[in-house]
Length: 226
Image 1 (cartoon, rainbow, N blue to C red):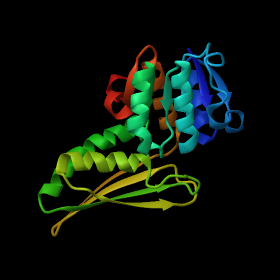
Image 2 (image 1 turned 90 degrees about the horizontal axis):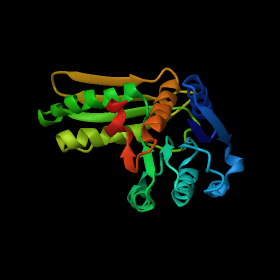
Image 3 (image 1 turned 30 degrees about the vertical axis):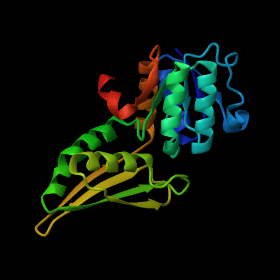
């Protein structure tokens, strides 16, 4: 397959590496080469199967819009743009393209969400809860997309909206904790990413899955199919 990779930061470079390992061809557009999605058109995307975006929140919205106009599917690993989801979902469906996004493309993190859903039942039994997340100092959005997905998963099970506390320090890849506290004990659930490779592998496998599909998809709903 042929992928166009938007953004070439720490995760983007790993996406290229993983894609090559899985036998795909990758073309890279760095941020300065694609301001406001202007480098994306039906002509420039003609030979690409799927676009993969790891840029920044503002750029990602422009990229999705440009891919929709060009009739090309896109995987969005960028977070921080989720306030635009209703509009982007309608655009994707109207344009008859595939859009796959996710707060986190790591299989391990999505397993963590499943464990958290089970543990969230404690909030119905006199437990209180908090979510903590730590990322590198250069991460632009806070709280992280992963923390928000975790919060939503807990709320769906328990009906309780938990507070998220965010830390930005050093080169932390991504650490997420769900803490459930009662008068008699405390439960800690933690996912600590050792590297960004898990995110990259999920994004590439997601791009393989998205090929030929139309609609608006969340990685947390489809990862088991991979």
